[in-house]
Image 1 (cartoon, rainbow, N blue to C red):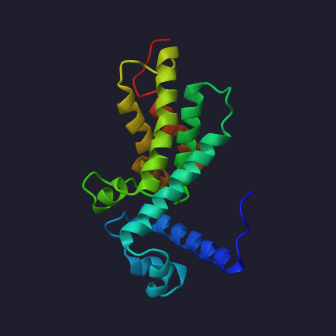
Image 2: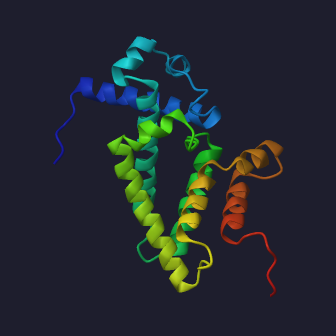
Length: 203
């Protein structure tokens, strides 16, 4: 049984949750390089000095937001029925990620050239969770390919990165801005093009 948090500890955690929600939104809207600590503090309504009591740097602030995202991803994975087909589980994760993206809750993935990447590579809470998410998705990809639900023509690694990329797909933003489709229709369009592809197939 987990120990009960004191009032001060609960308040501290609540404030951190609010801070990380703001970081998620700014990372989704602007990306890491353009986000500033001043903007985070202003969005939360606290002094920058108070924010630094929770997170010592911009890099650790963003890393904590990415850890929070992976924790939420693992929670979603944990709710999927064990009996579901591997490809159905992959589709469910993609649909959830696109919904989060459309709500402005999905941080953009760091570029291979981002200053954040080095911090994340050396941030054990992040790498531990990323490994768990990757193991789940990779296992489902390989199982789906073995069963013929996904083409074995494409390397599993390429499929994995394609699925990760759907979490921050700008196509969702363009479709949302256009106003022709509901958010749920956009979710299905992104999932459909991801898994069914674009080429016509003979009936």
